[in-house]
Image (cartoon, rainbow, N blue to C red; front, side):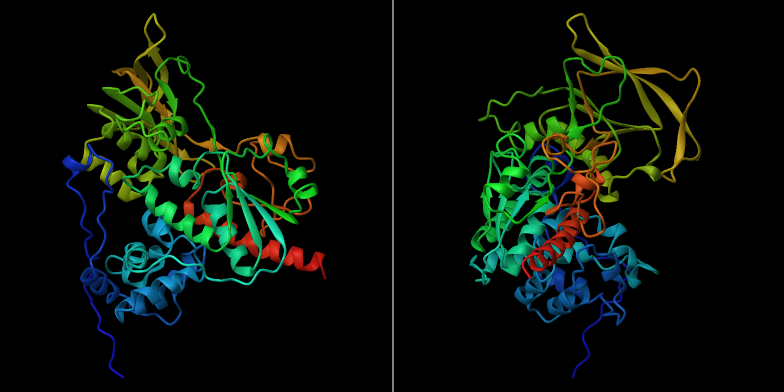
Length: 468
């Protein structure tokens, strides 16, 4: 048997993307994806390590060397099927997962160069499959048991996908008019096109998952009613973290101050970027986004695309402590976002009408590490300065919505609202499981998908034991 070809280049095959000056004014996807030739060349960089260290960094246990080897062999459909064995969202995860801190961080090729571009290859095979095959149901045999999933974000979709594969009748309840949760309202189309998410959801529907939109669990129906009146034997809560955290500084109630959740929802879900939609949003000229995570990058880059001339990222630590993906920071810089690091806002300035006219900040310096392990930012005395603005977007975090806790007896939560679970996603309420941001607070798409997967296995065991 001939040995597989190896590409010993220390660098990844570069993925084509739109020119920064062009893409900064449109919502088309920034990265254009690999061609077949590029994918094969990058796949040949994989050493097919026997101990598979990359898999240790994958929350959903994708068989990474196996799917890459199938790319090497030119069998892209089989490569996608290999990913689908453990991950129902390959096209999504290939685009938005922080591979650099997970699977790719453990890649042996990264010791003396760049790791294998695992995320780009996952995206390639998922896109190839979508473009070269017709969607069809898998024909999973039903087992006669019903499970409800609350929330259609990555945790809910992952849980629903695994349960459906096991034979369960699954209904997902989504509060918004479209399925996808944070994947459609929180992540802009230039990073994750809505059609990609819809395609993943449509496959679940073909496999029998029922998606009920415009249904707010806790208002439209309660968990008690789902179990007592509708016959669901277990519930998975994957409702995310949609409650914005604010700064608590003067002027935060000014006209022109948005939470990142609101700003991105109005743009992504309500189509504020499209002139054909009458979406209430400020088409600003000077915008400040407060925060240093992916949501802050998404908000800043969105502001450019809906017409802002100047957009600032205001972050109280340095680039080294910034939690956003390196790729997202790099893209924002290329597109012209102005970074004001080691800067902390202390007041939002407003005019006599109560509208934003600027923001007052202080310079910071880094002291000793705090509980997060990052160096604590300390104000520099006498360093206050103002930036003239007309819009401020606050992107400093979110907490779980308290609605489900307040309408469900016996469900224990943390002091900040996260549902308390064990490692399997089991809550204090019998038959109720939870995972993703509803448990941890805002985290990554893939960690939420992993939590949904773990909970699906626990739900299966629970129902089997209950009916034994």
